[in-house]
Image 1 (cartoon, one colour):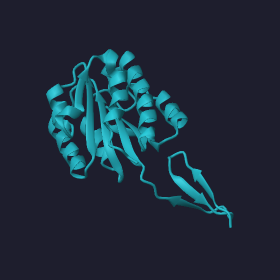
Image 2: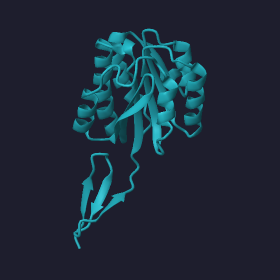
Image 3: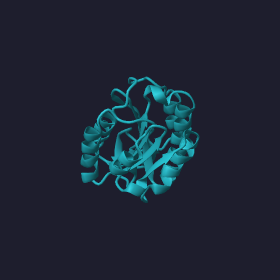
Amino acid sequence: MRKLLTLSKEGKLRLRAPDGVEIEVQTTRRNALLLIDTSGSMAGAKIEQAKSGAIDFSRSATSKGYATALAIFADRAAMVCDPSIDAAHFTRKISRLEVGLVGGTTDLAAGLVLAAKFPELAVVVIVTDGQTNSNKAALDAAARLKSRGVDIICIGTDDADSSFLKQLATRSDLAVHVASQELRSAITGASQLLRSGK
């Protein structure tokens, strides 16, 4: 009886029997979530830098054994792309990203609450240019993720509060504040901070 090993768009290995029945094969791949601020202040070059950096990050993360998911936050949070190792699929999803899709303010806690819904999450990379509506709510949500062993990496630009981002991150050295024109390279570089997923 011959079986075929396939890879789904979600990055999951499946074993297909001749009768067409597929069984998911458990792997050691880990999930990284990019959590990108799409509030009004991210309009223009910043959102383009964030999108390009996210694509670069996903390619590098895949080579380190991670599938990359994408979520956005403003007034509320929403998933854009489930964990994937398919670069073309991820690029298509992020190309549709626009400022204002989920509101205009900066409710980081909403994004972190959404992140907590992932059962197999290894790391969250937060990208923001402003101050969140509630520091306490965001810190509480981050603490719940950290208690599960999830690493939090923070990348801030413009009005983002550096000291707050250092509190939010798993360790203070996992939080950076960069000029807006360096946002892409900072997001790309965050993939170098991922623990080995293989």
